[in-house]
Image 1 (cartoon, rainbow, N blue to C red):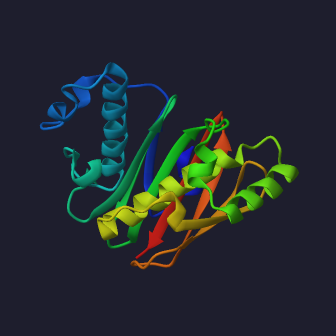
Image 2: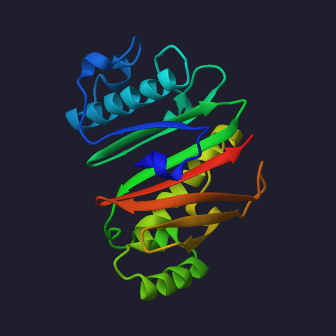
Length: 215
């Protein structure tokens, strides 16, 4: 599903079931040695998806270790992003000569837990979501906002190595329907970019958002 909101320069794969840990590469098992089975499944499967994308790019499959704040360390010349939620795992990769950065996120389509919207949404965003909800009440716009801000962070952090709070990006959605469309983000702090644009899709009970930076 994630490929439907990504450009042709990006290679993506997803899975709705977990693979076995025999698909892990050297160095990766140590990263989840103390993890619970659920976490081990997520970790293993998103890497399996990423290595399939590497093959699509003509790159030998390689270990995907983690760096600061758990961010994936990609092979030289590659940019990418991984995501997982109950029932869905995905990875999207591209050559750094063609794409400046990628941020993807998947969430279960449903209401946010009590109090979370107040933590992630600015007052202007709450008004915007309320208007969207009046037109498309079947869509959980708060969940879409959360996912889109996660995608913003996944593009921001590899460039800056700095934290970006939910309150430091203001988002606006431009739906083509209640389940697909685009969004824009205005960054409220100085950084390598002031605005970002992305796409979203709601399908099979999953919310998907993606941002791809031009080279």
